[in-house]
Amino acid sequence: MKRLAWLLVVFLAPLFSGCERTVPPELEAIRDAGELVVITRNAPTTYYVDRHDRNAGFEHDLVRDFAEHLGVEVRFRFHHSIGSTKEALHEGRGHLAAAGLTRLESREEEFLFGPSYHRVQQQLVCRRDGNRPRNLDELPEVSLLVIGDSSYEERLGELREERLPDLEWESDSSLTTELILEKVWNGEVDCTLADSNIVAINRRYYPELEVIMPLSETQDLGWMMPQEAEGLRQEVETWFREMEDSGLLSNLITRYYSHTEIFDYVDIARYLRRIDERLPQYRDLFERAAEQYDVEWILLAAQGYQESHWDPQARSPTGVRGIMMLTLPTAKEVDVDDRLDPEQSIMGGARYLANLRERLPESIEEPDRTWIALAAYNVGMSHIYDARRLARNYDQDPDVWASLREMLPKLSRPEYYRHLPFGYARGSEPVHYLRRIRNYRELLERHLDGEEVEAGRFW
Figure 1 (spheres, one colour):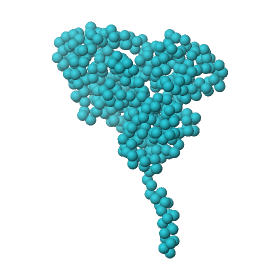
Figure 2 (figure 1 turned 90 degrees about the horizontal axis):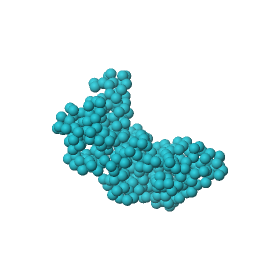
Figure 3 (figure 1 turned 45 degrees about the vertical axis):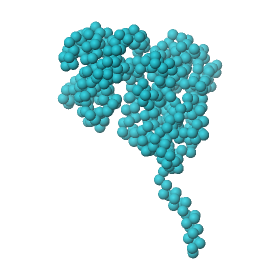
């Protein structure tokens, strides 16, 4: 009898222990180690260090939140080619890859993918004054360079098989899509393929780049994991549902991509010229005002350009004047006697922006606090309060810009504004206003990084 009991313990114990397991083995290992190892790439759409030496980027912020969900630290490993990323996952040198990877059938045969968190489209990009095809049938007549082992190569292969038997291209696994776009801009190659989110950011730095045509349907981006990491994949899906419900995903998309939606070739080309021609006259004033009122000087300069194109004599029919386009009542509020004086205007604009930021509830954190204050500079704080009321009515977070960005345009519609204390407003204007300021800010930051660090902080 004792022998039977012993045998039952020996053979049944593993079954009972299996029933007690609450997390898959790979999740146990991650939590036991206290560290999630993530493979990514150093680029504006994934992970970079901003000019304040802070880690940033769309993928970086997503990964950081997932690591907090797991209760572990995150360690990033950088791989700049898809081939080396896949190799690292196969060899167990990372738990997942968060690098703007397209979900392709060929990749899903090798790896597991988490849920889609962004949709992109492959676009043919050429220099607007260079050799470029007028239609798809002329694609074989231009030189093409794409990154190796990529969704772009796979798409070109499909086009050659389906329609363009003479289509040829070069691929280089040592280059990034961003560097190839720079080569197109420099005229070293006619065209390339790039995902729409990468194009949206980079064509602002290289305004002569032009999207000729889309070359794919919309495609999903997702995190890639080894085949044996089923438990990790399930945990990613659980976290992803929570993230969508909380609004984090839409907030991140707004933070990193909303300001890239506006692209005006003529405007951006002019802006880049005026950074060199006009800004040096006023840079010191922007820097001193920013220091005095605790505002980032690059952001203040970008706002000044949006207001007046850095023209100290700027006037509008509505009565606003100067570099920061102050109204007469606002000028009196911030002790500005001469709105056309550059120093007074910049100092007054910075003080007014700081005042608006202080008037917002303490529950609003940065960077949303500054974004909302800038919107108030344009539309008035009363309408910001109305937009916050609407956000609450629609069960959205009134403390984040992503919510107010959706609510403000409603202020121009009677079914909404007639029920609000401050009534009608041209609510779309502050949304466009802030998009342009953020766009100008990022372009200026990139321009200055090019002066201070030859390769730039993004790369």
